[in-house]
Image (tube, rainbow, N blue to C red; front, side, top):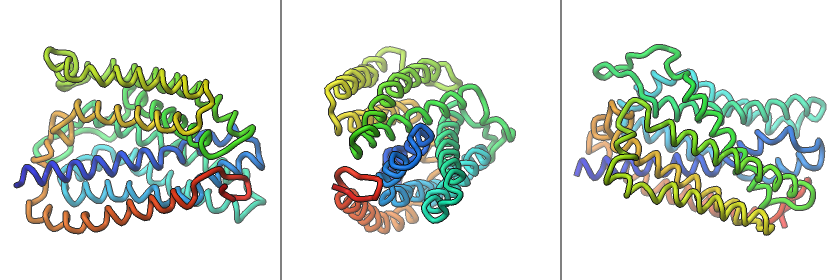
Length: 334
């Protein structure tokens, strides 16, 4: 029962993180692309495309972080100790970005400042998330049940590579969101962004995938030894197929397909990360069973989660349904 509950909770947290990456990814991406949009109509339209949704998207970050604390407290303490700087930078960036989002409408005299703050917060939040991912993949120094590394151990060329990769990937999903939600000149600009960002994102995925097997840990054995290579081979093949379909969809002027195909590539990357690290929550050091709380606590929390998660999914789905269609600079959806 303990094993089953632990896996269930691991799946819940992974699900919450993935939904957060998908939903908050495109509005962070719009913030990253924001300086490229013309002041006035285009920036207002881009902002209005996410205005009804962005704060609800971050609910999933709270669920993921809170679930990690409640279900895997040891992992929560170790990760926060090892990655305190990038995690705090991410949270401060998200706060400042949220303030800038609201104040750019209410303080038009300083809109240029708030636009810059919106972009800076979006960029720093995305970069921090990518750095956290890279730092976890490269390993965390653990002694007993405590973090044994230094303050700057998270800052390496690999973590910066994953940080930049996440920034580019978020910008890509932001551009595909604008293809779906806008029209005219802004949509065409989003298509041009999607072409460039799609190529760079694919390159980043390839580079990170080539480097990861040679990090400390057993990544090489999981991906490149027989018979494991036969089991994981469909992942890169599907990424290649999705990338080709993505290019075809842009060329043919499709609006929904680029967004969905980008989400599919994100999903494949998550599967790849899962293959690389499972059953570790801190690669090579702490398994999900080592970090899990008592079974009775997991059962208690599971009842609450069974109520809360469907409610979150329901109101999130309703919000996306109500605000479906194209958006303009005045905030109207058609």
